[in-house]
Length: 235
Image (cartoon, rainbow, N blue to C red):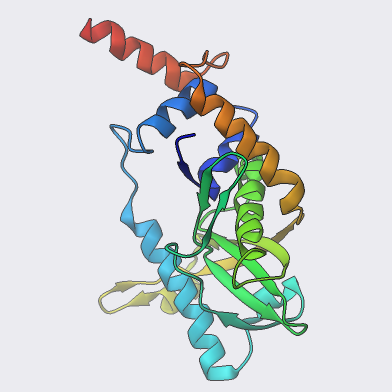
């Protein structure tokens, strides 16, 4: 079998109610490099700054920030492993599963808690993406339990919600001589940890989809409708 490489986040797409086999097949065979895709760099910058805040806070005070302590007995942040050696190759499907956790914490019992940052408000739309995030984080736990993060005892999301309300009394706290600051508030959501139950069946499903001819599209798939329109235009 040809070896397939997939990230934990892309694996999570299979858990969405809107999942389209045809779109997934195309993404996989294109190496997840599709046309007309632009990801604003500002979100990567915010994620990097969020990690820096956590680590500098610990360096200064010797504890994790207060808003993260809702996850329980987190003793310290530890360096996230590099993607070059944080992976597993499933022998049954020959799939290379990889990914990089946003944040890893060690607990008092020596186990690890894996967290992922989301720069967004926790809304109904985000709730629809929870199945994807649950697979993504369970895939990190699946890899972690077979590498240097063994054992993983918890996973969760940290939503950093932008605080956009402003009145005259709070103006001095956000405005500086060369710009302004936008505060963020942390909202935590712990997810169910069950990597050995969730991940293997999804890897088998990836193998089945990847190896077949182009699958049928899902009903009412907007992306497939757009693709079909493009195909008609160039014929």
